[in-house]
Amino acid sequence: MNEAAHEAGSLLAVAAPLLGFALVFVLLFRRLGLGATLGFLVAGALVGPHVLQLVDDPERVLGFAEFGIVLLLFLVGLELNPARLWRMRHDIFVFGLSQVVLCGLAVSGMVWLATGSTGAAALALGLPLALSSTAQVLPLLQSAGRLRTPFGERAFSILLFQDLSIVPLITIITAMSRNPADVARPPGWLLALYTVGAIVGLVLAGRFILRPLFRLIGNWGEREMFVFAALFTIIASAALMEALGLSTALGAFIAGVMLADTPYRHELEADVEPFRSILLGLFFLAVGMMLDLGVIAQRPFFVVGMALALIAVKAAIIMALARAFHMAWRPALGLGLLLSQGGEFGFVLFAQAQRAFLIAPEAASLFGAVVTLSMATTPFLMMATRGLRAEPIEEDEERDGPVADGANAIIIGYGRFGQTVAQMLLAQGIQVTLVDTDIEMIDVAGSFGAKVYYGDGTRLDLLRQAGAAEAELILFCQDGDQIEAELIEAAHAAFPKASIFVRAYDRRALLRLKAAPVAGAVRELLESAVKMARLAMEATGVDEQEIDRTEALYRARDRERLKAQIESGDLRAQIDTIITEPEQLTEAAAKP
View 1 (tube, rainbow, N blue to C red):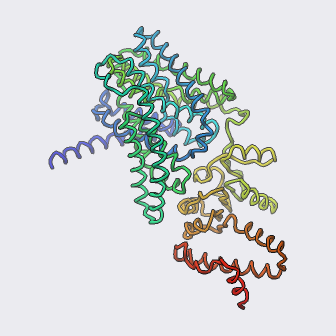
View 2 (cartoon, one colour):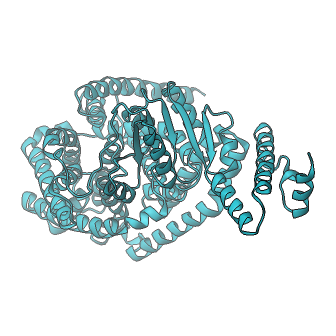
View 3 (spheres, one colour):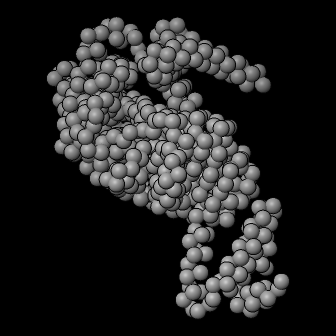
């Protein structure tokens, strides 16, 4: 009991200064426009064992906080359904492979020239430095609303391949190992087989276990169970990968992809996001704490020079590759700078190389400082080059985000449904702002003179940017079953002046929205189905008066059944009123 109390007291003694310093420096650096990541790194360096010594075990914090990267990849997976991922395959496996190979060899050569180390040691240090920081880059893209743009997709494709490359990089280090214990490790081909098998297993589990599980929880309406099931899904997929010696983040990403096209995506995002934010912050705090300022003080010119050389080499190679892949030079420059830092997996691979007797502990600390310093420069680089990169961009590398231009109505989704709604409002002189995420549709609409902004209109920050605070109407017109009651409630609370209208996928969607503050919800296929039925009856010779009476009968029964379903929450309410036989219609029509 005393040991447990002492452990709890020790944890509180560590957590209080850690979170306090983080709060102060993150607020300060955000105020200065330098971003939260740099604030976390500086706060970690100050409280760590090399300065104030308020926390003396940064690796313990790092081991726990690395779960933040796992949660981040799960959330990214939720943004990508399998069809979209397949569309990105060329960028992932061609662009991504080219970046890892070329940057790895170039940086290894640079390390060999700078240190005079053996070829094996240079590869053990240089190949990990070819990887970039997923934990830093993806939040930057998300906060800027660019993750789903062509630029963001290309950056993510490279980061995803880098995550996949962890397995072959570990295999290369193991093959060069001088440690007799590494002989017992599984060979590279077996690890590759494990990777394929684990991905297939996660895909099957997602389809036949996770989807039915979340459907069951959704029917129960237990919000707490969603959180529990989401964390179980992430931890189980990560644990499977770790047991096989693979990337835990990759397992969580695959689990996210499998749930991306389910109706529970928004609920999962809302449940996991707070954990992700806290743990990613702790991760960067731990990285800052591991920054050995003594090592930098001993060889300051080497550390700074190597960090700058790393940034220059990677930025140049990535920019050249981006140009070869037909990106305009400005976004190519932005991509090179965005991915120019070392990454968190560098610490993992340096430790692996140290255990393999390829590098000394001093070298691992020295190049760990290089990675941390390069990560700290990214916010400065992006801020310093903003003007250079912000010129009008040719082709389709970036899309304009929505702007508050005084429109009376904001229409989210400019497909077949949204186009009709927009044109009728415009015909009445109502100014509209159009938002969609389909790049191809935006281009086609542009060729017809319509200005459609790129963005995820289910995000409150994007709606605010589009002028929702002053708009009179917000109309959700997207394809598919995407709109949840929680989203409508949040939008109504944030923008109380606007009347909210929703394109409902089916009756089930209307049931979910029964308590939501919507001004109107329209079943997307009802009117077109009624119209086709009228045309079919006309073709069979039914007179117009009888057709009108039939339509009135159907609509009355449909309204009555829908009202009962909404009141009871049961989709089978008044099932006996469904017209299934011609005799029923005749009898019903004969009644006054």
